[in-house]
Image (tube, rainbow, N blue to C red; front, side, top):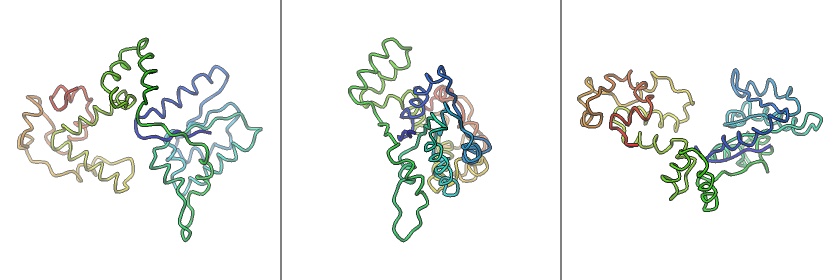
Length: 262
């Protein structure tokens, strides 16, 4: 079992995928429990995992981070690893650092320990993925890019100075520029979503919630100062209900409006 720990867009999932691809030729199968929920699927079928199986726990906080189900899933995973007659099996997962801290922190003496089994399971089974390539990795990337398509070479051109190559390939800089140069109503919607997540609201934010939480829009789109200069002559959303569709447009579409420059 191995869980890769790293920030967003550092290549955790891709590294896991590349590591298991060769196993298919040797009769291994991949199982990703997700239906009806990730935790429910894992609890229902971990006892049925057969030899030569890869248990895919991408975004492992959905399996281990819930206090109601995480301990039960951790116990089932421990049982799977302990019973050698059920092997060989490979359990791969990914976690952001903040979720790793949540699941492995020692509780104070006067409080219950909600992640005791999870912490025991993860001990010695995590590997940190760095945020940036070091010099050795950059040199290797340059050599690989010589025989690859243009995307790695382009990413190296843009990101070699700071080494955040995987983030560039994942589009993170373009998303950040989209926020930094977003028109005021769109930024209001994005900031409402960010505030909701910081306050502990779940991953799935209803459209009505977001539009109500965003700063009220003016009756006329043209009333927003500077909007015409930002978006050129093409029309933008006219009402708060149009914002989710506007925010969901591709970055290339937004770039053509002059909101961001690629």
